[in-house]
Image (cartoon, rainbow, N blue to C red; front, top):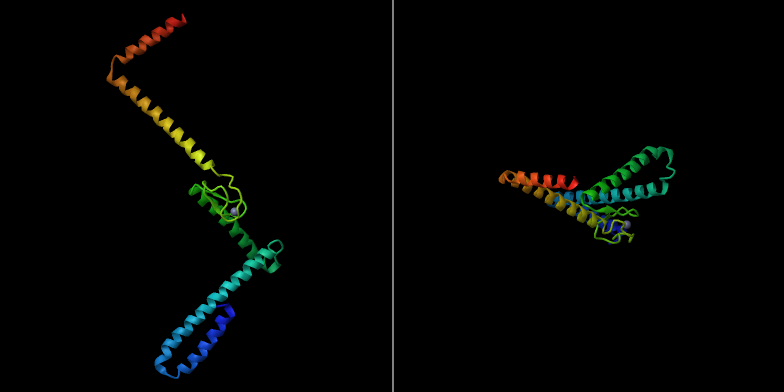
Length: 175
Ligand SMILES: [Zn+2]
């Protein structure tokens, strides 16, 4: 049902209700219905205002009328803030933001699902994660080796003499 038909149907309903209201038992129900209809109209009106405002902002953001300058400034600050927060969120999600439309891009998406722009970060996050994993593994192995060395030094008193022998052999070689 289009918007105008919706309004027409609503005024028909109001007319019918006015007749029903003569019957007092139906009054409370009619009142509730009218309240709901007012609410519906107000919601629609707010959406229309929002649409008008959004369009007016987009059309005039380069040179807002003087009386709107403050509101325009607040709007552009908020838009900027939303962008910052979105990229922060994307970073937390290990995703990136499309430079064209601001949509969130997963690292497994080669193109933006919203506008089709190529995802520059495609595969990059995975490569980074793999590199980080390799580094983590290497650090773990080094730590294990260190721990094992410390343990064998504790467990085997002869280890010291082995080192002594090696040092001796080394100094022999340099002489
Ligand atoms: Zn996009």
